[in-house]
Image 1 (cartoon, rainbow, N blue to C red):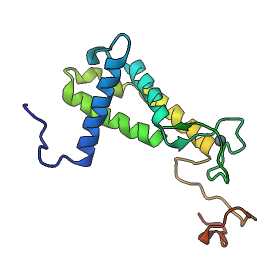
Image 2: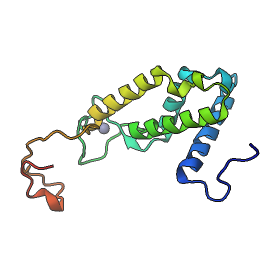
Image 3: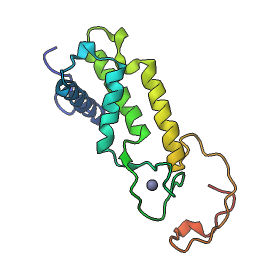
Length: 163
Ligand SMILES: [Zn+2]
């Protein structure tokens, strides 16, 4: 294959996948010593995901923060920004596909490693707790109108057992 297939208009997914792949290769190259893709394993992938947190935009509250577990904090706090679990999950999906396209042995795909699934599950659970946002379907919860002087949503004044 001389060139990637979509020379006209690669889909958003395809171009994103290519960007992610290049970012990952660049990351491996920048390691000391550099890591060749054929030697890359799940430990490198997880280190890469942790490295990406510094570019994250999702506030994940730490335990001592008063907003820990609050989905909609009324004020800013100093907790770190991280990559949202959903972004990491989608990223791993794209990298797994890219690896299969580029690498010789898809059976040794480090992005498909069980350790990655475990890591993502931990991120998911901890972010759900810290942000008070369940990633699963919302359970029906009785909500009451709360006196909330700081914030008033238009649809907030008549909430009664709905969500
Ligand atoms: Zn916080």
